[in-house]
Length: 193
Image (cartoon, rainbow, N blue to C red; front, side, top):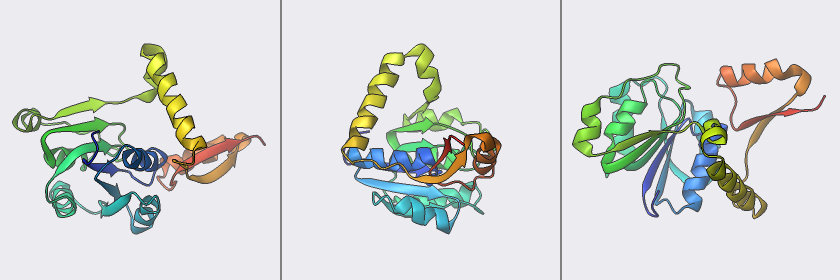
């Protein structure tokens, strides 16, 4: 991301989404748009301060999502960070400026969408997948350097992860249920019993 760019973060009230909002702000985003599934989650995403605009995509189809993005970013987007997939990814990519970038991190919406390649060609955009865990095998140096930078920002107070629930390790299945039900906002932390 370059300073001054407009960034859309989907699933913005989840742990990764909230982190993406904070990181976009630290890196100098001009505008951060939080896209979430409910009014309650929008308030949580906007509590980070950097997300000045919000979109609630539940109940919207692809056309409705595209219209909501257009209303929030009339000059279009430079970067899309997507954890939803489903009916949100394609309209997000269609909303990118020429030369924009998309990062696919997950599919919380359940459906893994197909990306029409004509969008990539006509807008000269790139879409990159990011599976953080694979860095430990394929690029551990980047993983370690990034983790160190995150710890530095955390120690400086620049980022503050939101913990929505602490769950005893012996009830780990309850933590997975929170995540699977999409009721969690922020991180679910396992603690010793």
